[in-house]
Amino acid sequence: MRAISVAPAAPVDAAVRAIIEIDDIDFHYGPARALHDITLNIKERQVTAFIGPSGCGKSTLLRCLNRMNDLIDGARVTAGQIRIDGVNIYDPRVDAIELRKRVGMVFQKSNPFPKSIYDNITYGLRIQGEKNKGRLDEVVERSLRGAALWDEVKDRLHESALGMSGGQQQRLCIARAIAVEPEIILMDEPCSALDPIATAKVEELIHELKKQFTIVIVTHNMQQAARCSDRTAFFYLGKLIEFADTRTIFMNPANPQTEAYVSGRFG
Amino acid sequence: MSTTAAAIFNRPTPAKRAETVVFWLLRLATYFVLFCAAFIFIDIGWKGGSVVFRTQAPFLNVPFLTEAPETLNVFTLDGQPRTMGDRAFRAFKATHEAELKGVRIETYVYSAGGIFPNIVGTVLLVAGSVLIALVLGVLSAIYLSEYATDGPFIRFLRLAIINLAGVPSIVFGLFGFGLFVIALDFGVSLLAGWLTMAFMVLPIIITASEEALKAVPRGYREGSLALGATKFQAITTNVLPYALPGILTSSVLSIARVAGETAPIMFTAAFVVRDELPWQVAKWTDFFFQGVMALPYHIYVVASKIPQNEYTRDVQYGTAFVFLFTVAAIAMTAVILRQRLRKRYKW
Image 1 (cartoon, each protein chain N blue to C red):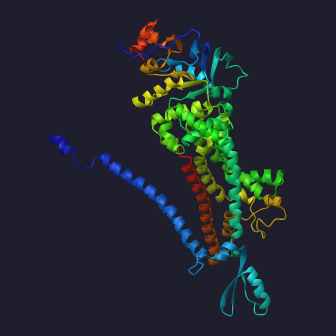
Image 2: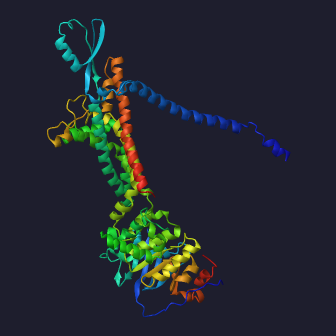
Image 3: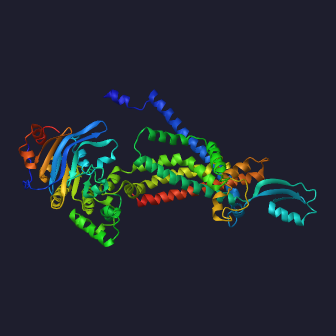
């Protein structure tokens, strides 16, 4: 078994509120069933990691949480509920647009818009109609500081975001997401295209962000899950195999499949 | 060792000879196309250029570019061959009534004067129809690429659009005549011509715009939506601007098509001759309901007149030359606009 460094045990406090409750979710892409009866709770201001081999449904589940799957033809939740703050987000009365303002997302492939750094950060506020220059300036600085990017880019806010390095682009996307002040940030393999140094910076950032936000991260990199998450869910073939605090998943998994996966025997 | 050395010496094998032949065929085919294009351009450029340009200042045949077409009168007086436009001839006739008695006067329609109203008409026709087609086409393309859920109906719609591209232009002309000119009672008018030609180029614009929209990375759409944008906001702020250069490429193609077509306008918008210029209308609404003269139709008219001789030839080549130049100029405007947009929205 490989030695894996595990983050110091997070205070796994039963009293921490579950902000997202996933309750017996089934999900289909057309006729193909992608998720089977998933039930898990995500606690406020913790980092929850979804791990598992490709095609196991972890990204699908993540994209259910802000209803990004709505955009895919034929994709739908077929059973169960996802409650955020106690509200079923698939209730017809729920506005997906408002939901996405509260549940931000960072994508696998960093996707800065081909605009200036400033315009990228202010995009979310501008489409909400914010025009006050002073307020926008303030949000840009706060978000970039929040994403540990301010010192690197403060002198070129009005240059194209496409001129940044890959790691900076991904942190810009994080800054853009926190600019609209969400409560939850979903990260879909945010470091898969980054080198180890840029990855380390993003991980550090995740550590900082959890003071303020609830973070759900999908990752292929088990060390990353071990390093930066409080709780880890292991998925396989659309099923949730095991969900526990990260230390348990990596050091003492209950399920032999989990043990085989985290020790690198498959996947 | 020795066999390799022998084998790699350049010896003609059947495969190599075949390749040489094919290579020359490909090359000749390309050169033949180039030769034909060059021949057309040089012929029109040379013969038309000699009508439009002058060797002395102002180096341009100003009347040809600024006057309306007139009938050319050709006659011989006192052993001197004379050519005169209609207006000049009438003035001349008033003072030289006696001398002209018995003189044989040949007339050639539209071989004197210029082609100014035709240039204006073509520019108006092209601008209006491309504008209408762009608005309709881009809206449909947005619907098809961003909103429509793929299904039998949408597939049928796409097939219909592609088929529309295969409809001969004369059919469009008659359709426009039946619908706009007669049924909707627009008369032979700019509006009828605009709509007819807009429908004709819609398939080009829809197809190209859809491709341009599809080429915009998905990440831009998802990124916007994840920040709480509505689909429409995502499209207008983060998809359409990046697709604009591609959409304008389609408009360049449509400009060439619209400007060149004669069949769709001969029933719907074109007059053989009209004295007023398009802006000489009583009230502004009349602007849309007037027919215009147009370059391609003028070429058709002057080319189909009999007899053909050196007098008619000048106006034919001159018009063709100005026509090519006008189309190139309009297309160039779109190309420059596209270049600017590309620079502004680089991705």
